[in-house]
Amino acid sequence: MDSNKSASTVNEHANSSASDKRGKYRIMAEIKRLEQDSKFLEEELEELERLEDASSICKELLLYVETKPDALLPVTTGPANASWNRWFEGFQDSEGCRCRIM
Image (cartoon, rainbow, N blue to C red; front, side, top):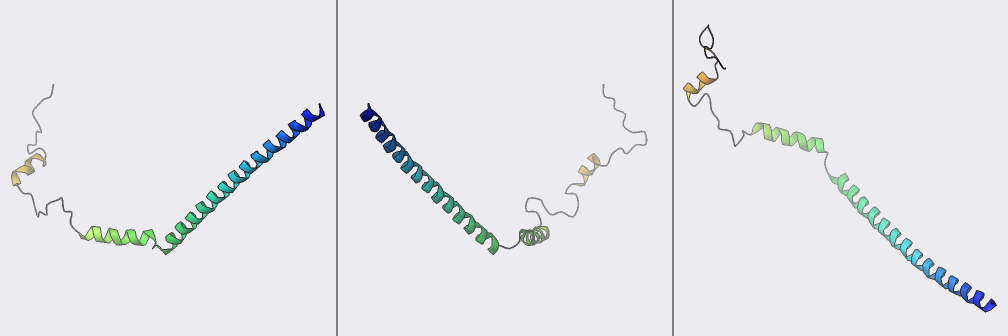
């Protein structure tokens, strides 16, 4: 019976040392990943420190955009067709609109 106990103790010790090694390598891999993440974040911070402030860039862009006319809108000094104004002026009669909607 003592031989069975000693054999089971040896097997348990072998299993625990194997799992310890796996745990050790797993922890080392996790530490390596965290080191890589921290290195990446440090590089990002260095890059951000070299950039200009966003507000100054936005101000420059706003000044540039405000000084340029919109390319999609035609530049006109008045209505292209004066007869179109009648649709936007409202009623010409003092009596108002005579049409009734039912």
